[in-house]
Image 1 (cartoon, rainbow, N blue to C red):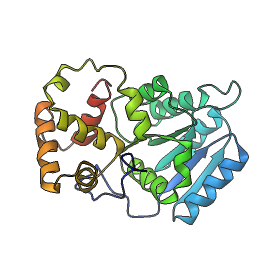
Image 2 (image 1 turned 90 degrees about the horizontal axis):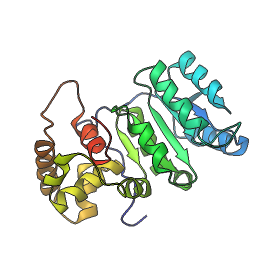
Image 3 (image 1 turned 60 degrees about the horizontal axis):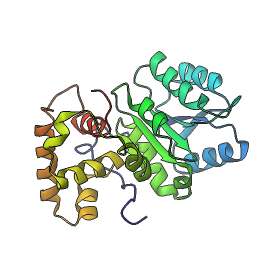
Image 4 (image 1 turned 135 degrees about the vertical axis):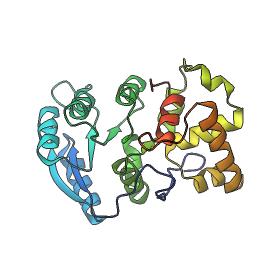
Length: 238
């Protein structure tokens, strides 16, 4: 996917955390065909599916019971096929703080994506369903979310940025720094950012350091600066 490829795996220095052990997954998808396909894909890639459900309330109960490392949730679920999956994801994060969610959607739905990001925490992803076809990239995204990072589809990032952010700090960023921050929002590593923008990895690291400074995000033991910078870029409250 030229110019919009989801990045390959990252080191712990570039992501909030890395899960080296087999991680546990809950799947919420009402299409039996897609749900079983996700189960096989995820388990063939070395993870463990601990629950698979077809509606929002069952998903929340599964998260409460299993406390998975990450969940995969369809935005639209029964009974109305509108936003039940998203509502369930938000409820799961409320009832089990720190729950990590990768949302799948057929289309870019800006309001849904913003609502998922609005709690100001990491461990979230929003991908279009056609990304699942690339197994390696999908699993890379799932691992990033499980490790507390972000994995946002390039199309989602583009649509979210249609609305101008209210964060005045973003106006201090140069055009190149905005490009770097957009690549960070997609989940790209430093090396991935350098390759995508045609710069050296050292230059990418310098841009990222400048971004942290301009967004007033000092190094911290409790806050993930990379995630907070992405949330600021997307207009979420941090």
